[in-house]
Length: 137
Image 1 (tube, rainbow, N blue to C red):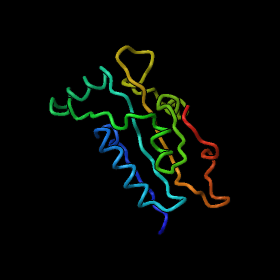
Image 2: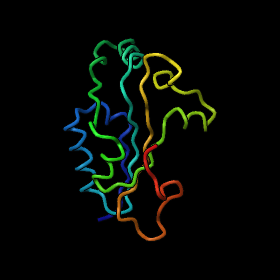
Image 3: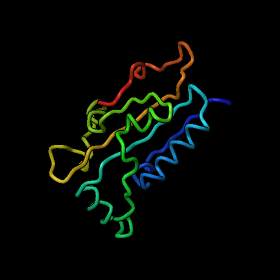
């Protein structure tokens, strides 16, 4: 099986927990060692709900929450070595403002993460910089 690269941006938090578990299980089965996965995930909050409602009232209930377990545990269960980063810290590193819906200085926010993971077992010498010993904050 060849290595794959997966992008699940804007997807995981829109799924109910059972569907999120099914997604990671399916991706894991289809991924050879050394495959990569990138995704974003976040907690719903008052500001985020208001923003979705402003776009369309139909968007308000689209947030299903995704996995019930901690992201690190959820990914490692599928054989992934995750690097999980707070979205606000990543924004600051790139000279960008923290997204309002994930800014802990504001009331009504949730936490948000950007995730990069590699499928185990990793080929010798093939661990990207930043993933060696990766774990959740």
